[in-house]
Amino acid sequence: MVPIDFDVLIIGSGAGGGASAWGLAQNGLKVLLLEAGPAYSPSEYQLDRSEWEQLSFPDRARHKGRYTFGTMQNLRPELKDLRSWNHLEGYLNDTGRRATGAYHHMRGVGGSTLVFSGEAQRLHPDAMKMRTRFGVAADWPLSYSELEPYYCLAERQLGVAGVSDTVRFRSEPYPLPAHRLSYASTKVEEGCRKLGLNLSPNPVAILSRPYDGRPECNYCAQCGRGCPRTDKGSVDVTFIRQAVETGNCFVRSECRVTALEAGPSDRITRVTYADRAGNLHQASGRVVIVSCGAIETPRLLLTSKNSHAPDGVGNDTGQVGRHFMETLFWFSSGLHEDRLGSFRGIPVDSICWDFNAPDSIPGVAGGCRFSPSAAEADLAGPINYAKRAVKGWGRKHKEAMRDVFGRVLVILAMGEFLPNSKAYIDLDPLQKDDAGIRLARINTFLDDVDIRRLAFMSQKTREILLASGVKKTFEEYSAYDMFNSSHVFGTCRMGIDPEQSVVDQYCRSHRWKNLFIMDASVFPSSGGGESPSLTIEALALRTADHINRLAKKGEL
Image 1 (spheres, rainbow, N blue to C red):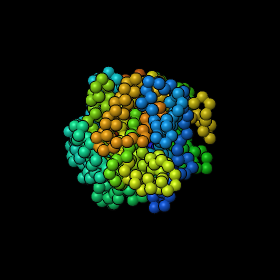
Image 2: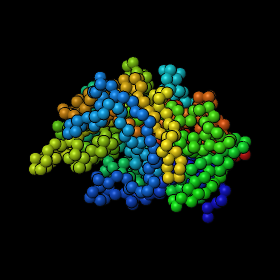
Image 3: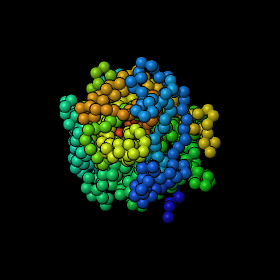
Image 4: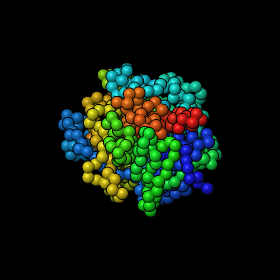
């Protein structure tokens, strides 16, 4: 029987919500987890179908949120070398303005980890002190050493496979051995070596051997379409499953929270949510955790206005929605001289950390990383080869396909995005959802420092491809002329000063005593290309420990 009263209400079941739920439920607190999207079963994923490449993650009603864009920036003619292009189509954005692509996310129990590539990287310690060391972004109000034990805990719960590096101190080894590099990635490793660079196995929440009742990976490279085997450590099959098994966590899917009700004594008194049929309900708890991501979290806070919070919950100093950071990325794809079988393996099996430190790119604050990743570019099946890599039609096209398939090599670069005054989330003045609530509007801008970093990323990516045996590049995708983000950060920044941040070092609202925010919106800086999910989970486990201590003291 589901209890009527809960200790904790969690809104959103992605990396932050799922890890928080486990950290609280396994300590005896009663948790209600509200998720706007549906619950998926791994048996629904469609990789066993012959048309798998034409299918994405199973599409259900309300599985993605709606949002709009503000005015995008003009493109500069002198930067045409940073434009996205394909040898068959030319420029992919042939306008004079940056294109509005997509915010790649997923609504569902497990959030965007349902479709992530399993990357489980720790943040570079120096990226947590960007203001002190480099005069940009903001410092994190906690140190890497304070977060490190929770990184270990998250890795154990997920079953992360990896090898230690020399920068990120570890108090214990990875739970599982690293995956071997695919044959295609060994060519990149050789290319990096020629350039004096290092390529090492990527830490991933993908099992290299059986663990926690789940099987090892079969290297199909299709994490983005859902993992039917459950070897990928998405939150639904790890933290949430483990939380529910305690008997203290109850999940309600397809329940979209429409408002937080701010009450007297600086507390959130209840939340209102709509079920699948549109019926409204209310729920209350001693603690409310918002984990909706860096776009939907500020939207919920800003639309939750009443006399106690006339500017929106948590927005007393106007900080909600500010400091938005998007994904700064570059893809270069080319044909290798050998048959690599590059459609096999895990999507991102290796990584070059050489330029990840915030001071590693000459003259530019903020780092980046490089990885081979044909699957991330969706070049793991014959249809996309036929549409993007191979010219022609008929018999000649078929012959070319036989020759080319499996020879594509792709290098992905991801880098730091520094917050600026033109990048923020606000509410669209006109567009609303079906409940009449204003949509989030994405306003974003690449500053000169981000463009210089992106130029370095493009140059180095091309060098790595050439050194790895690619003589001809046929496609490049760039954040310069196209917004396409899966990692978004910063809109409810954590910090010490309430005038410059929304939450404190434990992700607790500076004003609202029982409100916590637990997703990448709290990040003061984005890091040099690290995937954020492991850091979100470590922060969530640390916050859960803090809430558990407060509960024992009767201070909730």
